[in-house]
Image (cartoon, rainbow, N blue to C red; front, side, top):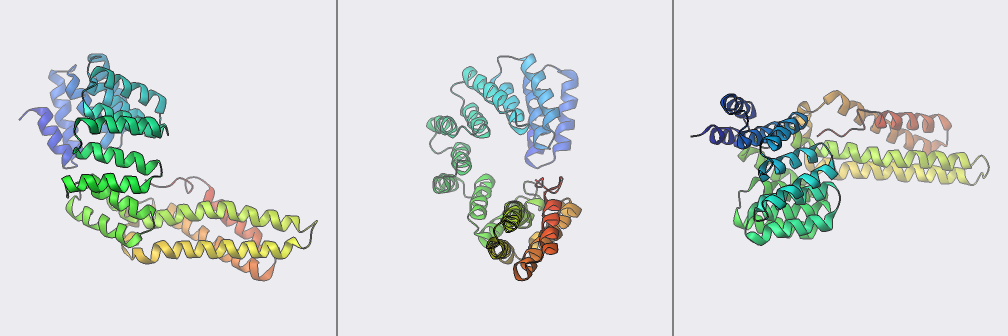
Amino acid sequence: MTAASRARMFAELGRFDQAEAELRRALLNRPTDVELLALLAAVLRLSGRPAEALAVADTAVAAGPAGAGAHAERAENLIALSRTEDAVAAASEAVRLRPGEPEAHRVLARAHVAARDFRRARVAARQALAFDPRSVPSLLTLAEVERVAGHRQAAARATRAALAEDPDSPGGRWLIALLDAERLHVADAMRGLRELAADHPARLGGEALAWPVLGVLAGLRRGLGAGVPLVLAVRLAAVRWPFAEPLAQGVALVVAVVMVAFAGRVLLPAGRLPWRCLRFLPRRAVIIGLVAAGASVALLFWYAVSALWPPLVAAAVAALVLLVPPLSQRPR
């Protein structure tokens, strides 16, 4: 078994440190081996180190400018670093070098998705699929394009087609769970993720199972970030137009009720598992965010029934705490 084969095996098992060590040992004797460099870049990217991975991918491209795989891996890292224009250029070069390689077209599709150019992304994904209409990776790429574009039914159709070819496909099962989550089918999403984590523990970390808590926190952040300033604006308008004061109370009540209903709609079907998985996240930031959001909602209720300024001001302060980094940065 070659060093590249051993590294791929380790990477598939999620043992990225061993894969990296294997590749670095091999590169001591062959420092300009394009395949090894591209594979090392992929391992570094999958282990969450895209900046380091990009440097290695650049070395691979310099060592073998005609290697489509090196350009494709460079594009993947540029996507991870949100350098979308450069990613599209790198992926396009990979396609130019190997127009008959489906993976190059899949990478180009992902680059276009990152650039929010869904028409071109769909064309690239369908081009990859044209080489093999039953290809699971190509079907899943098309599904991801449609999902990000907001076409959930088309995404579900492509994902089901992939699962018909490979019922145990981790990528397909992940996408189905993701689509369930986006449609707020929380129980189905959690069931799918639990089963996926049980079958592929190296692929799915505990942080993924905490998504209901993170989703609620993100939703409360957006809702309160818009709702509290609206209540304040209407209440300030009451200084000039007194009839706006009861309107502000009504808006506060609606915002608070909607936030509570949303949180219940997500958290109650999810059960206790997401809370147990908080240990895999920046727990302090999540807890502070939840406390701030809960306090803001409670204070909005208080203002709605009392029309007093102090609870409204306090609700605004709590909402501001929720929006302050790093709380405003959703954990990944």
